[in-house]
Image (cartoon, rainbow, N blue to C red):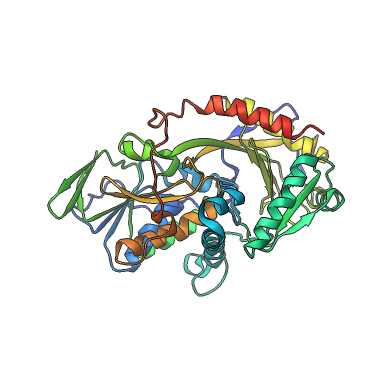
Length: 443
């Protein structure tokens, strides 16, 4: 295998994009005129927007999807592709707020989201492989949650008991079991969840785009929505290419909300997450560091997450800071974290670094809400691969007369500090998170 020079800087590019069709091939050429009226306008071309648009089209609606850049610019083709049960909020906080029965309902939603992605990403009557010719590379490997300290391992015991009380299948792993599975001495214990797995996120998005187009969705890239005006019978959405009338608007912008959505920006907190990818590894080295191919993440506030990719790399991501930083510096930080977990990768080259934005509600639970004429889906807090598609479909069904999705049944208050779009308070919160991580990892 040819190796890059050890001093070579990683390219600022998304490794997933090199092994996936470009979803832009499903878009309508930009020189064609926009329709003057449709039933639905979907804003945003990620997992939620494409899923909502396809669902509405399959239910007989004429649908226009507007993407202000290219489809692969957002988080859907840039994330870790991890499809796992759980939320940004802790299990204990969900039980405390909603009770045991309410918590089961939330986790049933999460598990249903995992099943929906598995259904779409595998061969079968509702899968995307046969209908689009694109394999999203589903891996039915589950995930590991890893504690880096004895204090963190003790917390996982309590977490396992709570999840078991809700009927969730989990397995506790002691330090010896974790070391045997991961070939790493960096962890004091772990929690294994056999449900879920991973997908190639860029291939899944490309398949979703092709399926939406086949269902009749008209996809327009480089066409930002710049204004929304209420008119008789619906809304007028303005763009630089013209205005379109519609009865319904779905917002799938998530962590990329701009000034068009001030009410959303007062509620959703965008957070940057970054990834690196190694060069393709020799099979024996890949097997040594990837175990059974499970998705992995640790329990820090400034968490790390990693996995093998279908083309034989290790993709390693995490939150490094809430301060602005360069991709080169972020790559160095993530590389150091990766090698601390797996010293076997000490001489392995890192070839790619990239970033994207996800979104949190203040309580770290997802939200569906009608705000200012737009039905928004946002705030999946790192669990969006599993949740976005299912919730988008449920949201369309709700708009067309069905039951509201679970996240639409709880209030979504603005962040309780002066704020709209720029999370000025996150660096200060980050200091507290870093101190907590340091405290918890004292041996």
